Image 1 (cartoon, chains in turn yellow, green):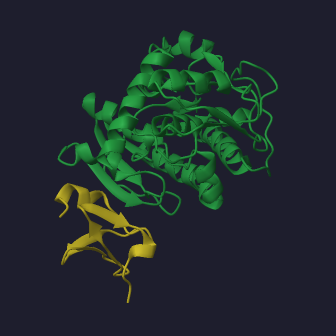
Image 2 (tube, chains in turn blue, red; image 1 turned 60 degrees about the vertical axis):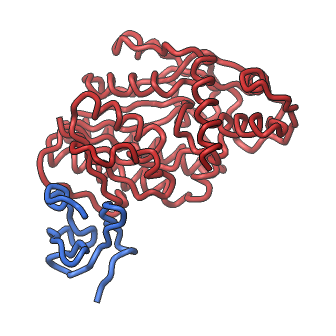
Amino acid sequence: MIDKELLEILACPVCKADVKLEKGKIVCTKCGRRYPIRDGIPVMLESEAEHE
Amino acid sequence: MRVLITGGAGFLGSHLVDLLLKDRNEVICLDNLITGSMDNLAHLQNNKKFRFIRQDVTEYLKIDGPIDYVLHFASPASPIDYQKYPIQTLKVGALGTHKTLGLAKTKKAAHLLASTSEVYGDPLVNPQREDYWGNVNAIGPRGMYDEAKRFAEAMTMAYHKYHGIDTRIARIFNTFGERMRKRDGRVVPNFINQALAGEPLTVFGDGSQTRSFCYVSDMIEGLYKLMLSDIHEPINLGNPQEMSILDFAHKIIELTKSKSKIVYKPLPKDDPKVRRPDISKAKELLNWKPKVSLEEGLSKTIEWFRKSKEEQ
């Protein structure tokens, strides 16, 4: 899991909006893309995100 | 200070992260891990002053909170890597540098560009001083890296002159040491792997081409001093002790106590024939010069290669 401080410096690589933590994923507050966390590392790559 | 470094999971980046943390800085590290490796940062997992984000800096760069220094170290750096990722190499030099400079501008931070001796191409003067303009084939097999870094330097200088950004440009010459990738195709890992395996060492051409190798701890100290300085002009960092590749091969055989022989293969196109830094500027302005001898640096590196081979 990642800490609050790290979450605060992250942004969505697509729309640059803030992100929040939801069910173990990093979720963009604007477009809703869901980025994985692997071994405690936020993977902020568009190609790795889930998007509806 | 709060420092952001791109390419922090790479060979030089990760060593610089270690020094930054040792000197009590807070470090945010970005890397897309196409050539970098988390193995280089595994020992920092529980360090509260260290944050890692897997991200492509050519896409976007937005970080909350203050930043004092932006260090742009992201780029494939060995010929086999940048020939495998030619577009990414050009993008990280051009778009990546644009993004990191933009961040430095927004945060009123200083920016350091990790440039390279490859901006001199296959040089027609030896040693190379910072005022030499270079001899580069833009469309040759090394052009994507050389030109990406030349563009990155031009962009950095434009941001300095036009936007008044506090910038530095380090022209990094051949560097070796622990955490070099074993299969990155460069001469130091190649020779050490071959010598340790008892295989013949591959020398390209007749081995008369020269290189000057700097041990990583010296390079990192030079980079840190440059970062803390206020020098906007490019600065050569490297070890001026020049030797032929053939002599270097013999040196590796001697230090590994290997029975390996030497085999010769054709010289790749555009391979620089000579490479030696003139470090007068770094000596004078940074009060820096390499301290570690080639033998000492190589012995440490060989030991590391030996150990990490056993772990595999």
